[in-house]
Image (tube, rainbow, N blue to C red):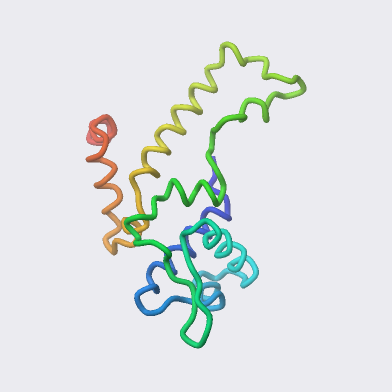
Length: 159
């Protein structure tokens, strides 16, 4: 299982913008330099984030990209959805049906149950985690939120 470059770099760009919003925002060149990305890739990612309402831009000498919403209102599940989509979602089995029109294991599929379980855990963690959690300098705010939000996860991680 891999996080795509678009998801990783998109989150990094969003974090950079979040950290610089209070000081007036950041330009594409400043973001690309700070994150060691090409300006064209940075522009593509920031455009996706802007079109989907996570960042906004202003022109002029003091212009740049800033957060469109408060960091606590930006939920990572929404960000990942626009940057790459779900690991397992509707149509997954159709896409990986092999040479048939429907997967040969469609009626009795243990693998589909496995992917659904993983997606459920991912949905839970990403749905409980906000940009503000990732901006926490200790790096622990998001984990504490996830543990307290779901007793099942907190019980299994304390053993």
